[in-house]
Image (cartoon, rainbow, N blue to C red):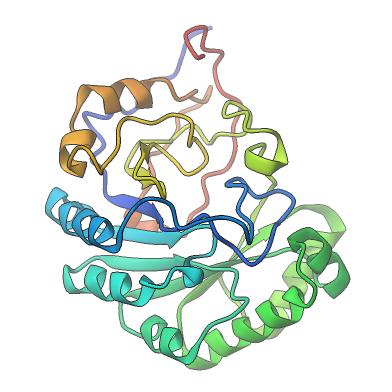
Length: 284
């Protein structure tokens, strides 16, 4: 079996970063790829570390950063980090459960260059709450979806699941006025399946995007968190992304049988769907 010709790290510059600022979340979704929960922490990265990452990213040619977690709104320095990213001309997305948004964060989210993303699981409140592990989470997330739309904040919603449940959920979102809805399936990572990083990868990890975890580790994707190429607390981000260890790590990502497109920061709302990778005897 031959492997399709793939882009390489030499031909696909990093233009988008996930910044996983915390492992803390008010919820404990039973499929969470990061195994986040109320007992999670903000990690070992300091606010100064994150500011340096944002500066280095902009200088390196990155155009988009996504603040993610855990739940990024639980991170006390989120507003300042978003503001700093905007000041260095980066586009910002905040992936939040929209469980609680204080007024000061609504003002942050309303700035030009900022967009929101959230997940939605069911039009039935009890089913949504069962999945998230948070009583009342459906009502609170739904209310803040409506508030984001009222304020004119760009919003995309990731609909997790399939079948009739997902169809009803999509209809409910359309009824609220959501126009950007992306459907995806549960990935076999984290709490969903014990961290098997080969199971549901899209095959484009590291091609155009990278992730920084709460401890400073650099990885090709938030869903390939066991593949690390160093730590930004020890080595500057540009040196890591231009280094041999990064190329080695990205080369270990299972690639699809068909051609995989690099992650495109100019169209960052496109989901990277799971694929069937080519068998890789060198993948450990």
